[in-house]
Image (cartoon, rainbow, N blue to C red; front, side):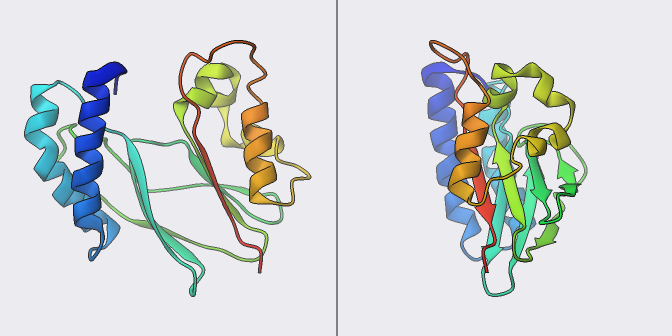
Length: 174
């Protein structure tokens, strides 16, 4: 949450903590530990961190994930159906009695995971309505790279953006 040096420092701290706990733990356990480690810093700065953490298993063609208040993600099936990812949890630093829960998606050939930042929504507020609307802009794309280009191209803004735009696309090709 936020911009500038304070937000960057907090994000660097959060990134370091998360990287230290994810290597040998399942996503939900790792993020529970990260939230515990970051709680005091987040409370003191009156901040929170949204994130989507996933562990991709290429052999099983599956992604196990935890959504900590990020929400800007969907699974696009090869037949065009859009699957909303669940469960969703609260951001790190937001008090909750609920433990983080994992979700899993399994990839078939042509299936695609799409993650994006709120910068895409800031550039095109109408896109916040549904992931189906965003997915409709990907028709005809045959590669992850092309999908990224199409998503970034949706902003069509001259000059500087109000916020950064981050897009990640994972597509199963075989």
